Length: 383
Picture 1: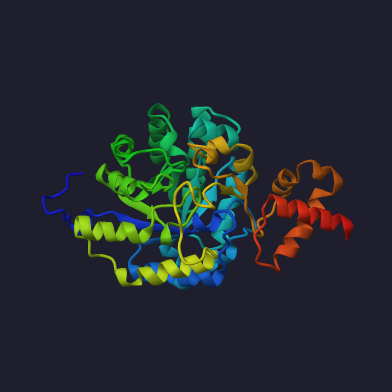
Picture 2: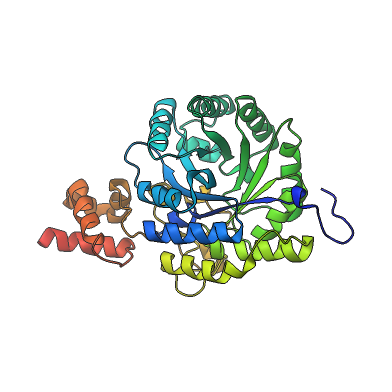
């Protein structure tokens, strides 16, 4: 996209902004927003002028994020909200969409792993043909139910062109409304981002969104590069908080749009309050540090991230003198606890112990790492 000499762009050509604080940030290791947090953050986002508030994740019935979704709907309305739906197979997607309908969701975003590595881990097949089939089915099921559909390319930034372009093309042919390229693992420079986005933005009828992570400190630059190359939407988070080194920070993004492009659509006066509210809700103190040296940069709460870290990292933590950690508050699962226990798993009923530990955590604020879970198991056995 050509930029006028004075840097200003007509308002109708400026990027539209979505915010993922209540989805991506809420699923970083150890961070758990409650319904009150969701309502306040969503209201501040809308006051700022953010068009779409992404909240919660649904994978099937009785979603753990139901309260967040409902609180956001109550605060800003379902028409300003979008909820992520995990995609694994047809039956699972149908159940998840029915749950989304029950919650009053109107817009969904499908999380679909597109790189061979992520597809092999999550879809049990690296086949491009199977990937496209899964996406088509999910999109068609959603459109039958009346949803506005965004479909993602999870790990899309590392997905080769010969795999990504047919996938995106097929998604729009199936009826999707928007495609989100997820730079799940930060790996691109701005000039590389322009190339990747340019190739998919050229697809007939394509509306593209960029969701960039900030492990390399280039999330805002990459987001602006994606917009320059044809992306119409940019995804950010308050304070830049989020998984794997954080996301594109909303304040830096909006102030960059103001300074670089003369964008006056947003009320920037709410940004400090919004950032501080999100940091308090996330229990991250007074500031969020992005990049590979932060204590949360390589912290995970999903067992797959701990058993297959190479799928989520371009460089291992040891390169920068950091370490990989388990960090969880109440989102305890049997596979995660079994991984943490290691050889101790043979000495307890892991399922019963997980329930006991989850109940204990519900009444406390402490984060758990691997050592804490193992210590709790010793305490549980002696009780």
